[in-house]
Length: 249
Ligand SMILES: [Zn+2]
Image (cartoon, rainbow, N blue to C red; front, side, top):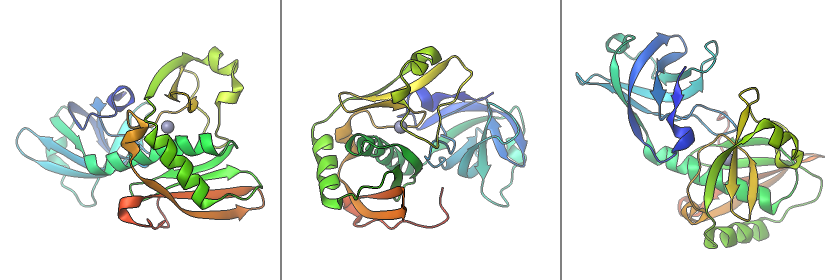
């Protein structure tokens, strides 16, 4: 079982940990700051380093496919795993710049949900773009959504998470905005993300602490994916029109 330090504090960029297992899925630690692919948000990249100086590049992070509750740190291909045997102490450090992009985009997708009050049936958050698919038939306007995002960013709303009981969630079915990603069940509690006065929904991802920290995001593309789906793609204003790349999560 990997302790998920990122769930309580998304600002952590490194931690000390002990290797629990190494297998085809990757390196499992007893605790980690690495977020595993989930809820549309890409997994973290970074490095594991031993006290002796051995360094392992981690290119992705996944929930372990076989060991429930474990997180697999996926090493670069052909990496030397010998210094990372079970029991080894390591310093785990994420690529903070890449994660920062995930956090800004992820928080921006919550703002999108507030601006476009329709169910979500697809979501992908990477360092280069974020996209959200809405189950709806009405057309959407790029400029007005970009302006709406800028307004919510400028208003500097506090962003915080808390845990609620599953019964509380069941009593408020309107809280669940996504058709494709249902909150994890069976642990008795569900993590909800609140953007004060703007959005409230179950979410396990990483977010910035205030909407002002999102900075300038723009709608780069609106697509009609199907008769019932409108796709909205976001990019950072500072990088120009971010391109949506194929094959990413
Ligand atoms: Zn979220």
